[in-house]
Image: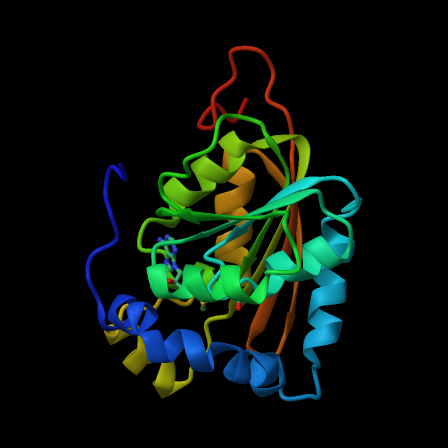
Length: 223
Ligand SMILES: C[S@@+](CC[C@H](N)C(=O)[O-])C[C@H]1O[C@@H](n2cnc3c(N)ncnc32)[C@H](O)[C@@H]1O
């Protein structure tokens, strides 16, 4: 059970609608071109993600907030042995399973990102595409990511960066959140990730590595 499930919001209602799952990848194919203001084909994003999580071949990964499993399928095509596709929306996961029928390595997980139902240190990498904008408890998600990744495990995050756009104000009322690159880096580094990141207009990218803590050292022990 999730200790604190995200509060109900317009965004969580939309995510659970069957129609959203049907149309999702149409929007997704154009999303980064719209956010970055340049031609940013999905293939380029998927190649960046796979490179950030390399080596992919034979590895075990998590697509966190997978929706229809776009990232999960790209990782399986690149040779991953298994990809857990986690989402709280059953309609999204059903579509992910259907779209991945040629990829037996996809394992759907109906769960919350704040309480990932996997043991400690079992993952080689985690991909988070867009979902960061929907987390109401990002600190809790970061702790979970640190727990499920093995030392040296890799993290990829793509998110919509905070801008001055009035549209973001409206979307915040629907339950979305818009972190800055600096804020997201600080959150991840505070938990023990080595992080690099960059922006292309309003789209942010973060690549992290789980750095093993010294014996007895806690996340809030900065010494
Ligand atoms: C913007 S979509 C991103 C989908 C996909 N990662 C991509 O790159 O296209 C966000 C997805 O994350 C799911 N989601 C949002 N918050 C979540 C949470 N706290 N736990 C699990 N799933 C969540 C939603 O149901 C939705 O399917």
